[in-house]
Length: 342
Image (tube, rainbow, N blue to C red; front, side):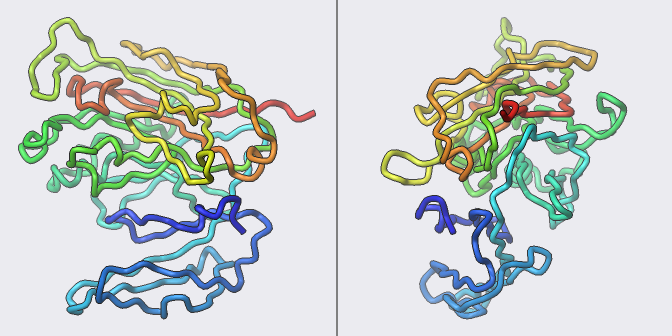
């Protein structure tokens, strides 16, 4: 069912109500018995380890976890997702989005065979922690109809956070959008870079060769550091890149890249980086070849042994909370093009 044994375990972010496992396309989903690790005294319904049919993604199995004192509970929807296959190109025009469960901010997803796939993530859940009263259009990452063809695209804006975030020297939040997941429980902690989990496993018919799309960019007026002190000789820049990496180490342990190693990890197989983006008022096309650092293993490529990360941010140093408030990056029609099959 799983390509690696470690894929059978999933850590659930504190704000998530969905649990997703990725399995091979040949997996039998009609009789699976998940086991949940609970906090001491907590209970779960249906029973932990009970057998259920997970073959219908439109009708997921729901589990309710209740605390020992009965005062806290949360219901989780559990999905076993068949590994997504990329043949030719992965294209996103960002036309699929919706409000979060609490209607605070927008989330983006891919739609395959009528099913919503939460491939895309943003730092919006972290911004919510420090700016809980913000309207949806005040968040760092929002939808807009100002796309390359005057259709939907994504607008990423570096925002001021709050006095709460200032206490931990996180005064700004860059607008970002990436393939992966975001763990809001780490957003205001010392290891905030670990909040961004870049990349998801895919099944590739052939290896990725080009990263392309459209962008435009306007930098904010004042570039500041983590102490909100202006750095007068710096002008903010946006960034966008794609990374293909081996998602397990040599011991078979699952690996995910974060804000501190997404461009430097030894797990990286190939990377395509759009040069830092300066002021660009008109929609501009880019087409960047992947630079391969390692040979590709054909079995891993087709069975989810590699993860693909696509990352866009309104401030190139946003991960270390430096940038200019108001810097805005628009992105549209992002494509990862694979090698033509023989």
